[in-house]
Length: 130
Image 1 (cartoon, rainbow, N blue to C red):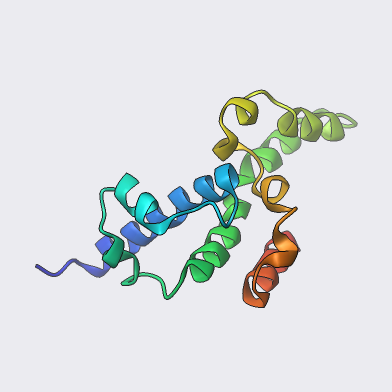
Image 2 (cartoon, rainbow, N blue to C red):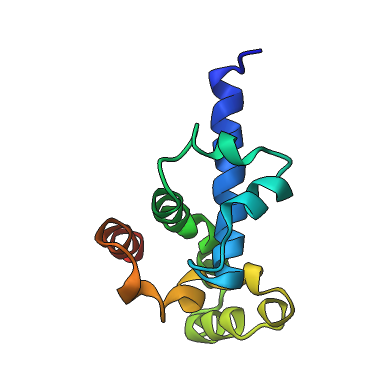
């Protein structure tokens, strides 16, 4: 049975979102593709219909981190003038990431590993942060 292009695109997005959480939780090296796909109810082989490598997945997950930071931008935009920095600090120091590392800031979680990533991944990180 062939899946529609829409279904394939949604599956790819699910993989990227789940991978982003896992990268935050375990770092780039701590993510096992087989475990990620099992968590999503998909096959390990199916991963390669969407991505050429784990590095490609990491680069795409990083490029989606700006979506995760939308909460910070939203909170800051609603802050009273002069309270923006306080809102950013409160966002980064909230308790949720302590009990659920996958819910924290990806850049904070991955910053110690960035220098060891392949060049295409580092380029994507730089683009996402710009």
